[in-house]
Image 1 (cartoon, protein in one colour):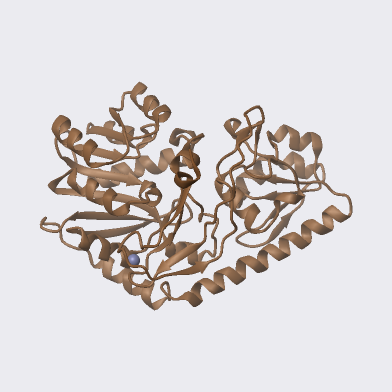
Image 2: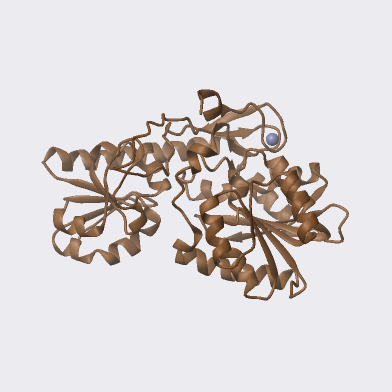
Length: 417
Ligand SMILES: [Zn+2]
């Protein structure tokens, strides 16, 4: 792959096409943040790419303009949805809620875009609903097929839409979970999703919610894969511009705060819920579209980073050993943002698929928790801070042996025995 196709910088808003975009959060430049590679693999020196957050001054959509090729971001894809038990529970409840709300039954047909290993669709299949997945990643799609989930191995484009309509017919429900945040061509994506629908069909998508990101002052979900950080106002305007309507929004507690959006064809009989206007009102009055809101978040993160670095420096100066817990994409972002990588001797992760790999950029070895007990570092930073309670509960023996955990967010906390 040559340099021209590896990376590009957009100049237009992905939702409305306007060219007035303002940088609202300065992020560290990072190599692909989920690119944990085996030590035995030939080293790929991916450069660091910018991933600053911009806001469209026309519609208010928050987005990354720096686009790294999916071949680089997803080429070494090690995440499958079935590897997360939380996600399994979430998908089960999600499928039941949507099936109930849209009164889906044995005659219904659902298409999931970015269907991964078919976990989400399996929940609908269990309800007796006909399902089809569309996913470009060969390995996970084959896993789905092997477990009995019909899957087309493809990106979403007009050609696959035509093929699906001819082969299976139009859908009562089209879903997209998180891939709606990954697509550089949101307009093309949403038009294809709409074209797959019956006249009264509904497009349902889950995306992380900008309002929750701001309220929680946590920005480690901002990275190259997440090109969009959605909010209600820009989405409402966007769907109107492609002949659809945003009919409802529900708030859900995944990925640090998300929204589940429902969209239908403009001419369909679906009424628009008052919730859409209410949330827009809350966004406007809370300052979600004002630059000052993001300056506060930036200052908060900068200050917190300085506090953590000062603590690590004092441990390092007195000869202590420091490790990190969590070899995830968000951990990479946090470690870069707060400039913590230089302190770490190793990273612990409980997922065997992550172990024996090296972290992106700094190539810090990822180990199991057995190494934590054997090496007993002075301090362990829980970079995957959302799982801090589980991690601490699982590692009482480390604390009993005199170890300490540092939790960087949402409150700075040191945990000792
Ligand atoms: Zn815009």
